[in-house]
Image 1 (cartoon, rainbow, N blue to C red):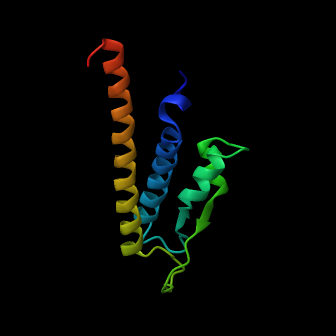
Image 2: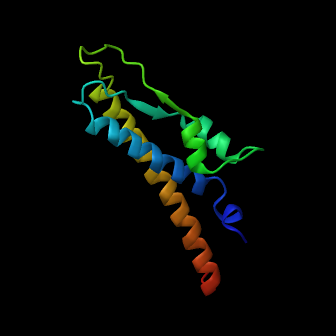
Image 3: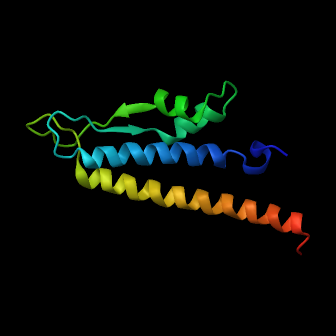
Length: 119
């Protein structure tokens, strides 16, 4: 049984969420950097790209689905990071990441029980 059969799309989803979390963290870290342009990944499009008929790697799917965030209110220094927006997106992505990780842990636990012969 391959990892795709065991984990389905959840392994790929976890990779994409991890890359998105790093991108959102970078946005937050650069909130005070003049001219910094906030970026984000369209998770749904990236997952579709990584798991569809012409599937690409998770990294390629993320790269292909990155967009610059359009700020609600622009700043004078050209920075497009809006800290409350980035923090909210980061928190939502972290919850989804943890949920996916817990699902995968449940799958691993089930396989381990089956291998041990536990009922």
